[in-house]
Image: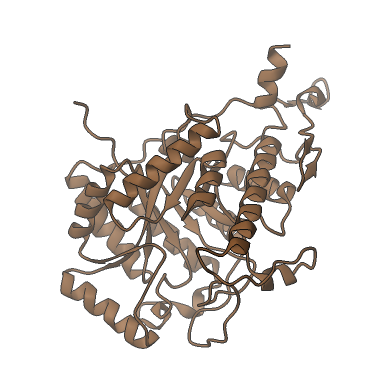
Amino acid sequence: MAPPLPLHLAVALDGAGWHPAAWRLPEARPRELLTAGYWTDLVAEAERGLLDFVTIEDSLGPQSSLRDGPDERTDQVRGRLDAVLTAARIAPLTGRIGLVPTATTTHTEPFHVAKALATLDYVSSGRAGWRVQVSARPDEAAHFGRRDIPQVPYGAADPALTALFAELFDEAGDFVEVVRRLWDSWEDDAEIRDVATGRFIDVDKLHYVDFEGSRFRVRGPSITPRPPQGQPLVTALAHAAIPYRLAARAADVVYVTPADADRARAIVGQIREQQAAAGRADQTVHVFADLVVFLGDSDADAAAARERLEEWAAAPYTSDAFVFTGTASGLADLLLAWREAGLAGFRLRPAALPGDLRAITRQLVPELQRRGAFRREYEADTLRGLLGLPRPANRYATVQEHR
């Protein structure tokens, strides 16, 4: 029997950490959250640990303790930098790690997102990705004034909520399709750059994408040549059937939030079914599980750190993802056990930055390396290469070759 493939590991970066009180810790850097140096240091640490990529959180409204709108809290981090621009600033200062900023599909235009992420792929020499996100918040819709998002109470059995989510995620699917077509709208050799003949570009190798749907009409081509990876990595967070359908249709990596290995196995099965229904059964779609991590030198240390943060927040910490509190060795046990459910990797959300990130890179990674479950050096120069994904053929060039 062949040995199992090494795990893929990513970290999700957000402010001072995923616990809302993490900014109050002595090693936190709350005065630097809006500086390039802060984010560069975090990503450099992740790269030191040979992680596949980092994701950078973003939204079209301020952070909130509520799911459907802003709150009035003054004791938590509020305000953030644009994730795509932050990634572009960091890119020249890093060398191998993937950079996956969040960009929202609701209220934005696919043409703008396509050229921004293509630019990031150039700036990073092929290490760009995208975390696709939708917005169902009325306050975010009010920033733009082009559409109304109704205030719908959250509830699993609410048909209005289901209909709203279905519309937003179907729109996101169309959005990703337009972006992917725009990335392909320049063939790889469209730029000739021949000084002797004075020909810089072969216009026959630029293509209209001519996308027409109920939500977008985009002619193309892009203004940015095809990215170095051909198609930068597309990723999406999915909690239930509707976003599973989006991920299976549009993503290369999907983040899921199982509570245990059995649930992870069931979710992977659902995504594979949706993948086949979308006609992508022969394509690689990696499934990563999300976990929030509170790490310590002992289980007691980790529990004490979490308890201190919960005291400051005056509430127990809860998350959409599984919350792990313990040692790096214990986390390694859990990751390897969950891998048997069909997961390709994990996206870890450090509860506090930079402490829990350093615990991932300096304790968890060496532990996984000792067990033969994680790389000892970067084996590829591009993000797709790190994840074992091929550089896709250009859909328009392929069509033209067979005419």
